Length: 414
Image 1 (tube, helix red, strand yellow):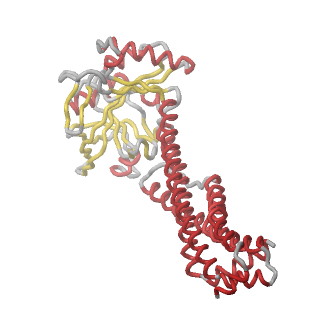
Image 2: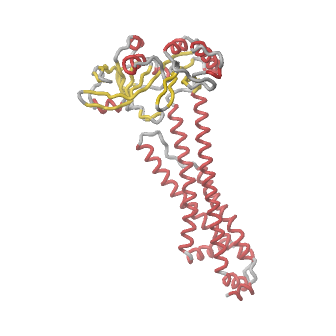
């Protein structure tokens, strides 16, 4: 019975090529978007996780924030066109945090954009002020050379570690160690070249230079604060207790007695990873839900088309029933037509979605983002199941209407 219904369905669909094609196109576009969104969600998840991979789960981040229940005074904040910069996180905080018994290494960092010059060639690039202990906290490898030392940082030495891209731009195959570049017209001696790192936090980590934090503060920016402090703990099992104790240290340094007036926020990388995964998952779910609504709308279109098909083929239905076809034969014929339409649309949509996901991947990698091209099996199963279910559900009413036709009345209408 199914084989006969399937043959009748194909014959009917071939007879109405344009109508069938438009119906398949409507379903396939929705399925393609589902595939693309779920693949992009996996790529975005990989991107977010790769952003945090430079830090391990035993890493703590301390950043400035505007106190929630107090007005920031001029002494503690500098108004800028883009907002407010809290300036209370400083070298004393870094020093006191580093003395905590559960801390391995600590460094503060700041960032700015400056003109970097070598032998008359200028390049506007990001300049990171980072502490000498940075390689102990985050994943950082050298292609050549070394990190600057604590003595070099404390003495405001003008030394620099350059990124892979900067090295390629200025030196190519030459050895950059020992050479001098100019940052803000000040000479800096190159002591290290970083290994290729790619993009992180939506920034090309190869296209930057790293100088000691204190040198950045005093010789480049003329400030005495840092943007953030990153620290690594010895015993991960004491992570929560350590966070609480660090909060007390900073509050004492900043003369804060009310936690609601904190001008800083402490978070662990594990918390950040879980939060970002939840956000990515929520966005993906929302988008897929919206697309599924559009597929339901497409299902209503299928029901309308099948209803029109029943009306147009009233005589055919009457003739078949008069020749011995049963209600269930007619029912299965029209249900099969609807299911075949949506199933073909599902297969075409999967292929189209895979192509679109590939284009998204190529665009992301072009901008040096850590993206992955991966089509989740769940998205394929969801697409095929949903498309078939749409065909069955929305094809049921027209099929039942066709099956219920009286053969005498159907033949008389013709």
